[in-house]
Length: 81
Image 1: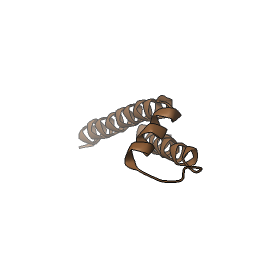
Image 2 (image 1 turned 180 degrees about the horizontal axis):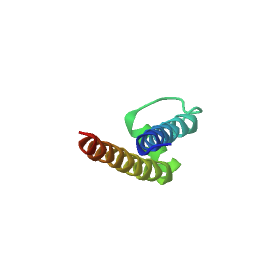
Image 3 (image 1 turned 120 degrees about the vertical axis):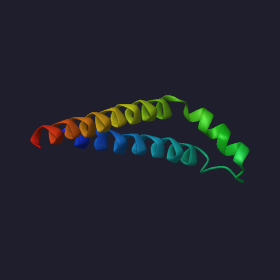
Image 4 (image 1 turned 180 degrees about the vertical axis):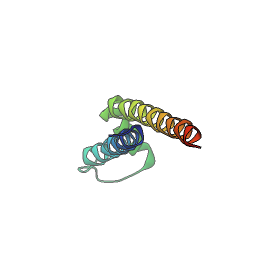
C-alpha cells in the first residue's frame, strides 16, 4: 500500500476515535433527565482525554503520510519528463 493510502486510513482512524469520544459522552448522559451544553461538557471530561489525544496523533501521522506520498509522487513525475 502506498503512502497516500496509509495516510487516508490514519485520517479515517482519527475520525472514528473522535466520534467514539462524543458517542461515549452521549451514552454516559443517556440516563440524564435534561440536556445542556454544560452537562455535555462535563460528561466529555468524565470520558477522559485519551480518545481525542489518540485522534490528534492519528491525524498528525495521517497528514504526514499524505504529504510524504504527494511529495514523493511529485518528484517521480519530474523524473519521468
